[in-house]
Structures are given as C-alpha cells and as structure tokens.
Length: 103
Image 1: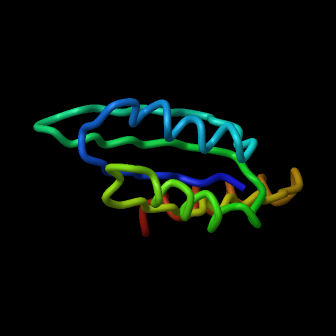
Image 2: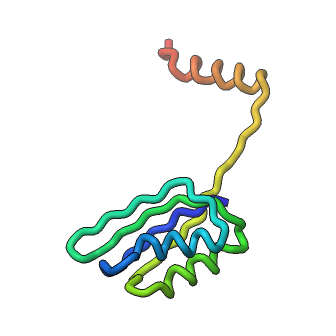
Image 3: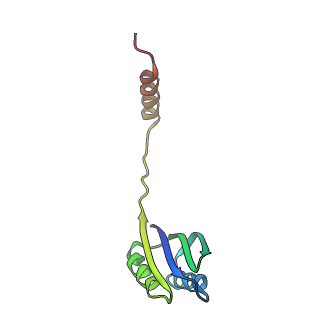
C-alpha cells in the first residue's frame, strides 16, 4: 500500500532524521521524501510503501515525535484495469464516432 505523509513540525534539532528513523524502524519503503524549513516551520512530504496494517501505527509514532504539530496520512488507491485488444478497438471506434461531425 502506498501512503502519502504530510508532516508539519516546529523547527528543531534532527527533525528530518527522527522522521526517517521512525520510517526505517517500521521497515517502510521510501519512494520519495522531501522537506523544507521556512519561518521556523518544517514541512515534510513523503511517499512510502508499507503494509496496510502499519498505517495507523506509523501515523501515531510520527505524531509523538518532539516538535511535530500535525501528521496527515493518506492511502493511495491504485486501480489496475485489464483490457483486451477487442476492448481497445471498441474504445477507439467510440472515440472516432464521438469526434465525427453530425450530418
């Protein structure tokens, strides 16, 4: 399962490393991680891969970190659609017909 994490914290020592430490100890696969500091506030965005059963625990652990104000954790749902070659041809015909001018 892919989770999108948004963490807002007060600027403090080792905020980034403490967040990364939580993710590492929970054996989370980090797909992307970015952060910025502006006017005493740290904003971290992370895209991680983990077991669905760990989502609430990760959010709780991050929320308990020193200086952390908010943690928003959203699950990303991906849909995989299987289409046959006939389905694709039918879709292409529908597109052509819908783009044709009316007589």
